[in-house]
Image (tube, rainbow, N blue to C red; front, side, top):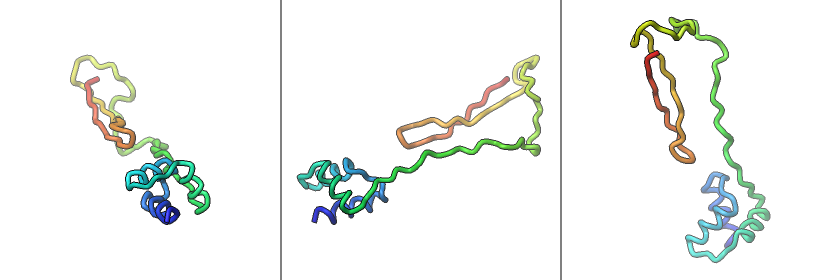
Length: 107
């Protein structure tokens, strides 16, 4: 009975739950079980927790010739509001969520 419950919770987590997570879920459902018992059951069942890898952002490998470079890296201008630039910055809003933020400013 314990083995089937551990296997069910592991599959529901898409193979990402470890012994601590499964132990917490089982305790919420009323089971009296410890982490080391869950760990041994997972070992017996051949269950190994797999965490997703980090996201790899692509970096530009070639210059985009279709986008004109009007400034040619000369950022000194004679008056305000003659040249504008911007970028997209990613901000961690929690442990898992990334929000894009657009920032503009005059050069």
